[in-house]
Image 1: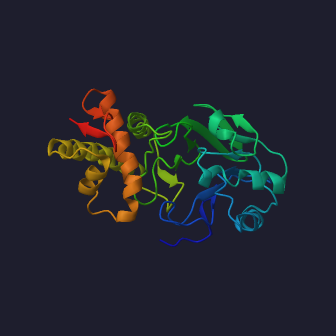
Image 2: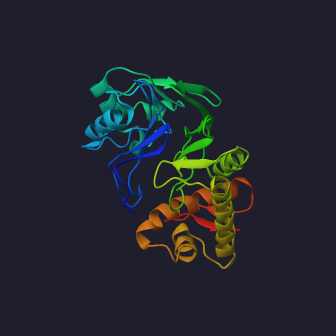
Image 3: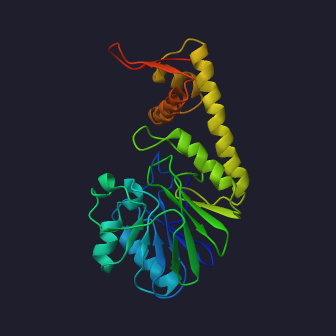
Length: 281
């Protein structure tokens, strides 16, 4: 999927791509300039790739009529979202970098974090962003609800193509499902994801994601019932139609499902033997 390096999605939102396309980032990370005035908010900063800062400067001048962003708001600490923040601060000078705190991860990036918690509001010129703590993909994940347009910036919780990986380190499948259920309760007109195109049928997409994860859980339990015992074997069965280069990422989501089921008492894990864990229903 090829998308323009910059495009205006609405009167209040301009997308500036992070120039980091790949099998797990799609066309690259969507970063957003939000609001009018001479200091629009910058939502996410990409991975810090060469060429991003000149592209950002061009978008600021052409789309916003200014030469620098204001506050930086981040969805989460994964490198393709926060990685460009040190460069942005170095280029444009000190400014607030706001995110949900995760100190043991935040310290790996050379920026001072201003804590942002669930329900807190960040305001720019003509924009009101409400932060929503939405863990599951990452412990610190925030979605942002743009109140003026009923737009939801979903970060990596919901993507413009494909589905989100739930990593075993920092991720949590039970929390992810709760996050999706919470998002269903919002009045959302359109989703602006961190990767891929915007999603106009917001509620249908959230429901699709929730149904997909529950279907995967049923498939994993069926695989266990058929005698499969390892994550690798379950992935080969459940993701047989998925390109093999994505199987490692799929394995993380499968393992996250199994950990959830283990906590619920629905599966058991045997780690006593050499080699991978073996699971039974």
